[in-house]
Image 1 (cartoon, rainbow, N blue to C red):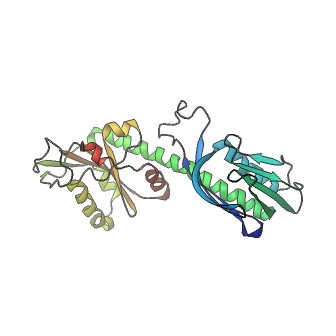
Image 2: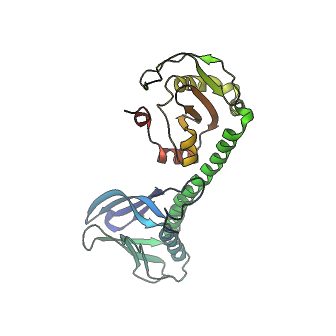
Image 3: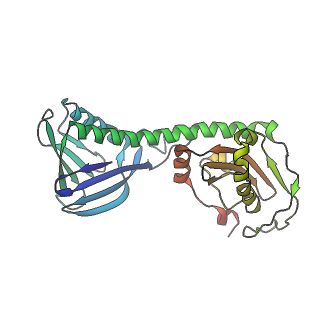
Length: 288
């Protein structure tokens, strides 16, 4: 969201992610220091004091919550403290310069770049409501992302531990391993391709042709696309590949066995989470 100031100045604040994302198992209170959840934000400032752009963890979650509350109260002409500040990093100071029930509010936003740098906003209740609503929407999107991945985690965990899905549908297959050679695993024949039957439920006749080439690519180069977001998945070797409107989850044990666990429809929440946590570990896994 963007705060619009006088003289065409503006401050953009976009919520990106948690600095230390919670796992699908819930918060790690030691890692998160209790409730001290830092929020990664992208800051874009165009001001008479200079232009600045960076991604920083300058807000705690409760500070963003309070800024939303502060803006919402002002938009309803309800009394509120004159100052709203990021208390830990002390990067922003929002200060009401006139009365809370004035038709238009004058807000001074000081920012910690150059000494004495600030801009002033003049906003009516409609604009203040817009600011509050947009910031809340970004925060809710972050929360919904992790609710969604928690749901996904439960689906995958159930599929992995349910033995009845571990049935070979495709017979032994010869695969060509090109860029992922590892000493002791150079034989290109006899690699078993194991499919979970639950895949059939996720696919329709319309998209099978679209997905199969991508699955073949995973078979040929199983370690090219991979990601792990907690110890459970790290231990089980879960990986994924995003293909347009689908996400393929699969596991690889060395190079002998590939098991396609789940293919789901890609939505903004799953995609959002996975993009945050994507890392290519293929070189590390190959011992290079």
